Length: 162
Image 1 (cartoon, helix red, strand yellow):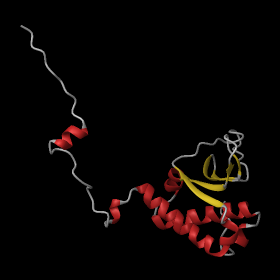
Image 2: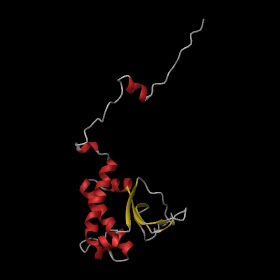
Image 3: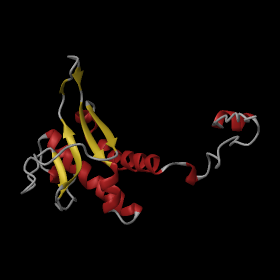
Image 4: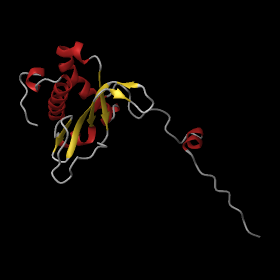
């Protein structure tokens, strides 16, 4: 007589129900390691933008800041890698993009936003302080493009590395 085996899949819910799953967070929320890499990046972006927003707050009220993992845009001409003025790039890799205000597919008004690409920016910075400086320089350039002024006007002490 053949034996029929019942193979139930063990789900995280059933494992947790029997006391074998994770019962709570691994690290307490008070520990800095509790935040993910994306959370730390977001915090660094906000700190870098706060330095600009302090001076230009009235003119930046309708500007949003967003973060994407990787860029979803391509160069206009892949051979010579020409980027439009609203894109800050290092060679063929875009680091950020200014998306102007407009109308979306549903006919609703959208606000202007600066989109920063997290992974390319993190790869270019060897140290957290370098990342903060890089983010600040990019944000100064993008805010200058948004306002239609020179980056030196947004921050008189910035070098033009891009």
